[in-house]
Amino acid sequence: MTSTNSQPDRTPAAGRPASSKSEETRARILGSALASFRTRGFHQTTMREVAVDAGVAVGAAYYYFDSKDALVMAFYERAQQEMEPLLSEALSSHDALERRLRALLEVKFDYFRANRSLLGALSAHVDPQHPLSPFSEETREIRDKDIWFFARALEGTSMRVPADLKARLPRILWMYQMGLLLFWMYDRSAEQARTRQLVDKSLAIVVSLIQFSGFPLMRPVRKRVVDLLQTVFGDEPVPARIEA
Amino acid sequence: MTSTNSQPDRTPAAGRPASSKSEETRARILGSALASFRTRGFHQTTMREVAVDAGVAVGAAYYYFDSKDALVMAFYERAQQEMEPLLSEALSSHDALERRLRALLEVKFDYFRANRSLLGALSAHVDPQHPLSPFSEETREIRDKDIWFFARALEGTSMRVPADLKARLPRILWMYQMGLLLFWMYDRSAEQARTRQLVDKSLAIVVSLIQFSGFPLMRPVRKRVVDLLQTVFGDEPVPARIEA
DNA sequence: CCAGGCATTTGAACACGTTCAAAAAAGGCT
DNA sequence: AGCCTTTTTTGAACGTGTTCAAATGCCTGG
Image (tube, rainbow over all chains, first blue to last red; front, side, top):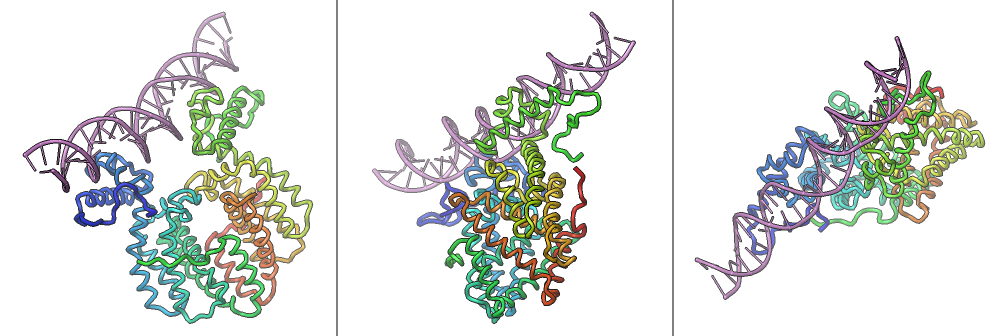
C-alpha cells in the first residue's frame, strides 16, 4: 500500500473491531489538523497546536501520521474518495463534452471552495520528488483515479475524437484541470471572477480544438502534437483502471 | 530597490571605497553557500555549515542575506546579469525565429547545466506569494528582463506576426521556456535526452503555430486565444523596458 | 488472574532556519 | 588622540518539524 502513514494498518483486519479507539484518535488528530489548516492556514499551524487541540502529545500525532505533509495527504485522499460519487453523478447528467468537463470542474471547485489554502499547501510544490507534488509517486494513485474520470468524460460523449489523440487526452485534460485549479487557488479577484472567465473561455477553446483535431486537414499537426505528448509523458497512455 | 537583502546598501556609494571588506565578506558567504548548494543540494545545506565554511558566525550570514532563500535569489540575480550579454549575442547571430528562440534556450541550458539542483530550489514553488516563485513580486525584475529578450527575439525576425498576438507573445514564450526548464530540471533520462527531444519538437510546433496565426482563416481562433490571454495575464502586455 | 507481548502515548531532545541583544571594529569629527 | 556614531560580528536563544527511548495501557494465552 502506497499510503500516507506506515504504522497502523488501517484496513480493519480480521478479528479486530472495525472502529477501535485507535481509529477514533487518528480521526480526532486529523480533524484538529484540518480545522486549524483551514482557519490559520497550513504554515501557521503548528504540530504542537494540533496535538494539544486533539488532546494528545506531539508524539501521538507522529504515531498516526508520518509528517505534517501526511495530514494534507490524508485530506487529499479523503477528498478524492468523497468526490468520486459526485463526479460519477456529474458525468451521468450530461452528454455534450463541454458540459461533461464543466460538470467535473464544478464538483472540484465546489468541494475545495472551503479549503483553498489547504489545496495550496498540496500543490505548492512542482518537484515530482516532493510527496505533496501533484506529480509525485505518493499521489499517483489519487491522480490516476482522477485521470480516469476524464477518460470517462471522453468515452461517454458522441463527439468523434481521433484514436491517437484520444489515448493521450485524459492526462492532458487532467493537467488542464490542474492549471485551472492552480489559477483559482491564487486568484485574488472578487469571488474568483477571473477564474470563472478563464474556465468559460478556455473550455470553449479546448473543446473546439478537440473537434478540429478530427478534420483531415489537421492530421499533420495532430500527429506532431501526439508525438510531442509521447515524448513528454512516455508510454502508458491512460492509467490502468482501478477497481473500487 | 526590490532587493534581496536589506541592510547594506550595496551600490558603492559616494565616498566609500568601491570594494570594501564588507563586500568581500558578502561574496565569501555567497560563494560558500552556492558551492555547498551545488555539491550537497539546497536542502541538505545548513546555514551553520555555510557560515563555518565562510569563516563567520551564523549571524553574519543573516546580516548579509535576509534568509537562506535570499542566497538563491542572489544566485538568480547574478545568473540573469551574467547571461544578459550571452543572450544578446545569441540573438545577434540568428535571423529565423526558431533559431533565435533556440539560441536563447541554449544559453539558459548551458548556464544552468552545473546548477540544476539550485535551479530546482528556485522554481520549486508555484505560489506567487513565495519569494522564490518565478511568479513572485520578488522575482519580477529578473523575470521582466528575461521576458524582454523574447520580445527582442520576435522583433528582430522577418516573420509576420499579428499585432494582437505579438503583444502577448513574449510572456507566453517566457512561460514556454519555464516549462522547458522545469521539465529539464527533473528529467532523469541520460544526458537529459528527453528534454532535447522536447525542445526540438515543441519548438517546431510553437513556431508553426505562430506562423499559422497570421492566416486569415485563423483569425477567429486567434481572437479567442488572445482574449483568453488577456483574462489570464490582465493588461500590461509586455513589461516596460528596463535600462541597464 | 497473571505474564508477556503488542499497541499506544508521552515528552524530552535534536537539527534546522531565524532573531536579537550585546560586543567588537571601523570611521569620522573636533 | 579621544569621543561618538555606524557598521560589522558574535553566539545564545527561540520556534519549528521530527525522532526516540521509555512509560503506560490493553489484550491474549496459560
